[in-house]
Image (cartoon, rainbow, N blue to C red; front, side):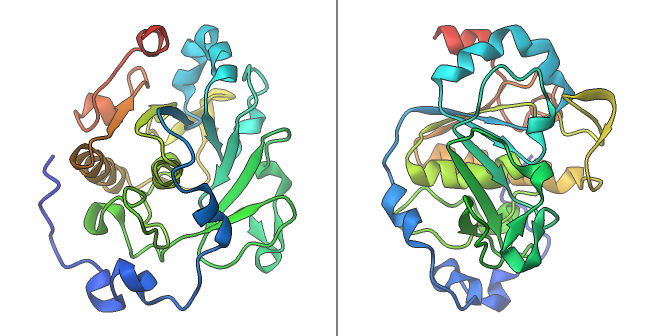
Length: 249
């Protein structure tokens, strides 16, 4: 899948460039400058796909890793670790004009709760990371967090990929994804019938992952999928690695 193919100009051609925050009148929160390049090495970003159930014997090792979970992951009661970072990157959980987050999307015990959202989130115990309008898409505008400035984040059409830009901004150079099955049905806590909240645009997700991998490689960083049977690696968009091999490496 070529990341150079662009069917029509990106919306940034009309709204403005990343340097002026895509034309959004806003100031980035100060905490983002404070965490810039404070970490290094590898990090593990979790979707909530059903393949995680097959990796359960290995997931206990995640208690010693830098981990990120998304959305309703706390529903999976078998998860054998508490994530360092828990993130939402979609609008549904944000309530009361950013003053609250639906409790179903929290992860009790996580060190950081982060909402990647278009408008300010002031909910107690949540950090706000600005997100660009969904017309600003990673597949066209690029993967950010690799340099010395950070605009509102373009969408990757999958929460784990969107937040990966924040992980790279913090300084991680090796990103490993788990549970990004990229299916319409199935969650770790309900592999057979669990559904995503909204049906996915699979093509857009794959194109965004392709652009993310390309930009990461150009920056000397790596993006790898550890999702057994996941569509992103089956389609050849991301390289696949067995989780056991990564942990043993």
